[in-house]
Amino acid sequence: MNLDKRKDWDTYFMDIAYMVSTRSRCSRRHVGSVLVQGKKLLGTAYNGAPSGVPDCSEAGCMIAEEYELVTENGQEERMIKKQRCVRTIHAEQNLLLFTDRIDREGSSVYVTDEPCWTCANMLANSGITLIVYHRPYPKDSAKVKAMMDQKGIMFRQLEGYCPPPETVQKVQD
Ligand SMILES: [Zn+2]
Ligand SMILES: [Zn+2]
Image (cartoon, rainbow, N blue to C red; front, side, top):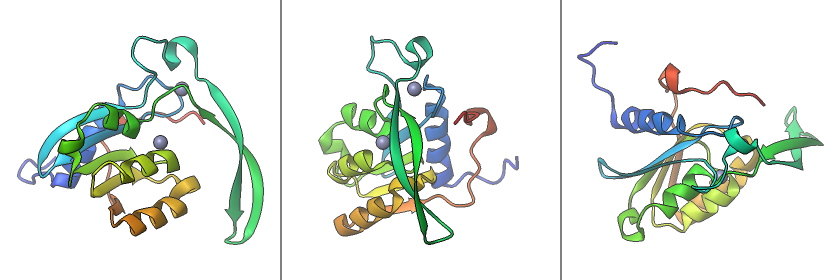
């Protein structure tokens, strides 16, 4: 790495979100998020079971199956069965549980993964005004983007970004 070239703030905070995600014990998905006011870090959170109860590494993932409508070739729609882990509180929800409303007013969230519908809905009502994510989550993306638009919350993917390799989970699903 060229030490003369400083990291820009987007990279800096996304790197921290990825570092935070390494705390997750869900083998299916490691997600990290950080709350930032201006250039100041106000909180960090990852997805996990409530503290004091067994997590995914101890009790296994709690798998829920659901059908998802996917669009292929731009038009063909079909239902496919998907599995997800419902043991964990999502990183974005934990971030809201561990930060104060007054700190969140006008602040930004950096999150490793595009928020799901439920998290996006909560973030939209949390006082934050900017969400930056890295990995896309196509399932909820269209409705999440439409809602952020309606709310006037800036919502963007960090493009051309490479997370620190040691923070990236080998995805199993
Ligand atoms: Zn899990
Ligand atoms: Zn979520």
